[in-house]
Amino acid sequence: MRAALLIVLGLAIGIIGTVFTMQALSQRNPVPQALMVTMGFHRQQLKLAVKGQHCEATANLDQLQHMQLIAADIPAVFPNAPKPFQDLAGHLHAALLTAAQSAPADCPALAAALKPVDQVCSECHQHYR
Ligand code: HEC
Image (cartoon, rainbow, N blue to C red; front, side, top):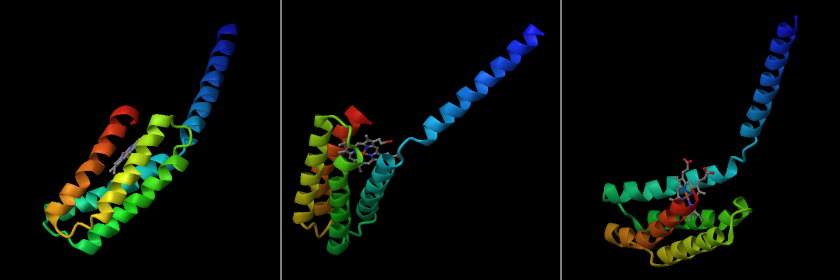
C-alpha cells in the first residue's frame, strides 16, 4: 500500500515537474532569435548576390538598409544584455551605415563593404551566442 502511494506521488511530482519545464521552455522570448534569423536572411541575400555575380546598386542598398534598421532594434530586443554587447550592437549599426553610404554598385565593392560588418557579427557571436 505504502509503495503504491509512493509510486503515485512520484508520478505526480514527475508530471508537475514536466509541466513546469514545458512552460519555462515555451515562455522563452522568441523575438531575439527571430531578429537574428531575419538579419541572417538579409546577409544571405547579399551572399547569394555576390555568388551569382549579380550585385545591383539599388538591391545592395536595400538589403544594407534593412540590416541597419534591424541592428537599431538590437538594444530594445536584448534589453538585459551587458554593456559590451550593446556597444557591439552600436558598432554593427555604424558599420552598416558606412556600408550603405558607400553605395556599393558592383560585387567587389559589396564584398569590401561587408567585410567590417561581418567582423562585428563574428565578434559578438564569439562572445555572446
Ligand atoms: C551585439 C551582438 C550581435 C551582433 C552584432 C550580431 N549578432 Fe547574430 N546573434 C547574436 C545572439 C545573442 C544570437 C543568439 C540568439 C538566440 O538564439 O536567442 C545570434 C544568433 C544569430 C543567428 C542564428 C539564429 C538562429 O538561431 O537560427 C544568425 C543567423 C545571426 N545571429 C546573424 C547575424 C548577422 C548576419 C550579424 C551581422 C550582420 C549578426 N548576427 C550580428 C548576437 C549578435
